[in-house]
Image (cartoon, rainbow, N blue to C red):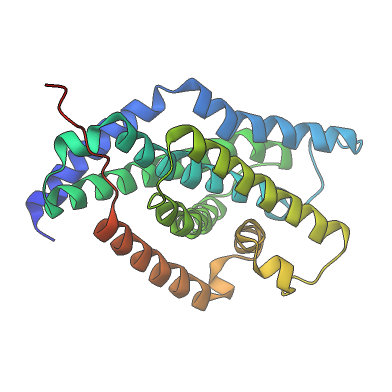
Length: 247
């Protein structure tokens, strides 16, 4: 990859990042809502800060949920949105343009995922005591791999001939199905390696968050391998809606 492509993708990524950060609705639903639910759930159980619980185990599902939202309703959703708005057809003419566009989107949402992880950590960690520097970096690393995990289906779903509203409905159904599957697994006390749980990316992500990648390095290798394949498949088959001349 040439330095020019990297430079152009980085500049475009900054534009995409600034644009996304100006969306208060996305910030609210992706970050503030899970934080509020976290405190409400603990309050309903009669627990008040400071919590005498393991922080990572108590918040692993919330980190997994946030990473899935960034991948589906961020990375994938806005690739489809650019296609629907005519952006890709108007500005992407060659394979190099596709690479710059996808790379910029990925860099942008990588930054956003780390930002959301950091903010959620700040919003919830003080309720468990003083923050720990090593813990912060371990959580960020695990969270980023969760984002990569969800980015695999998120990128592949952009190849479907779906519109903006259809994609929104589809992603909502997928998120709801993962959540229900996870709740069922917990209530039924299924083993972490059960067939139902292994089919649920949200459960896998929560396991990554709670146990850490350092205990399962093969998981990190698999995620990186599948993500690389998904990225290049998306690059090769990126859908571009034609814009027909009115005249």
